[in-house]
Image (cartoon, rainbow, N blue to C red; front, side):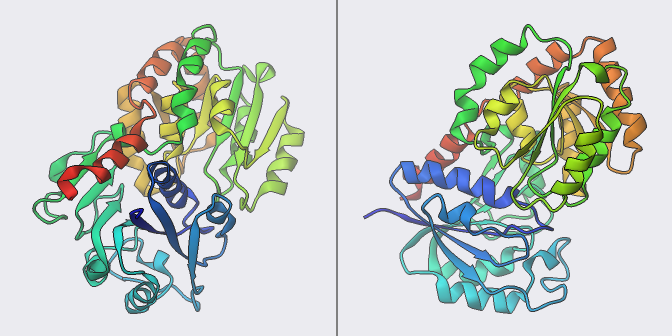
Length: 366
């Protein structure tokens, strides 16, 4: 009988799509190894159930929040839960089937209290996190943040918790590993940032994409640019971005929920993107980045990538019309692209999902 693995993650206009998407990547790898996969998600505004059901996974949808900001008030992202902790636990308990081998949580509003309450219903619990800001009761914890150290979780996890830390475990779809060699070979001969991809997350709630298009127009190299803007299926500013694209002094392609992001990134010279999960995708393909930090939880990862030489960083509060052209012109002036590409490729190899799945299958858990 196939082992049952259940994922608890949410997506919304506020939360974004990243948590669900990286869970889907791990789910795909586990299903290929014979696991029976199911998801539990709450019906937040901006959640698309087809992200999960179109891939053939069972989905149990929790009721939408009744209104207001609810959740554990002592957690930085507690309001992302949308309901009280007691209601959340009761609803999940009613849905979980007996015989769950692994329960995987990827949610900033879930901590030890939730896990302890649900633990009797699952043989093992895994946490996917990248904040290291709250305690957990879990058997396995994955944090793919570059440079994350075990001591950062020492007081947040029970003794004996297995920690998978660092970009070696970044959860990427197979096409990033498959396209890696060709991408690295191609960009050896492209030393000027002419093909630029703008990727500010699946939702881009603050509409950085339009602001970046305006800022790129101020670059001295702008006449050479061909820009592709990647937007998710629930991005709320698509029409506004299209208006800015039409006014740009360079050709702009809008890629709405593209089927193969890896192929699109592989034929780009430079990315302007956020510091979330997309940063690992770019690294796997050796794509240099200008990272625009959009949230506090991206600060550490962006700093680590910059320190490694894979990217340069712009703060969310900076004047993009000044800072972005200045960064790109410095990259051109100093001939930085080849070194940035090499540094990026050294950080992620695209094989994180198989490594995590193998840890979950390890005989040590039997």
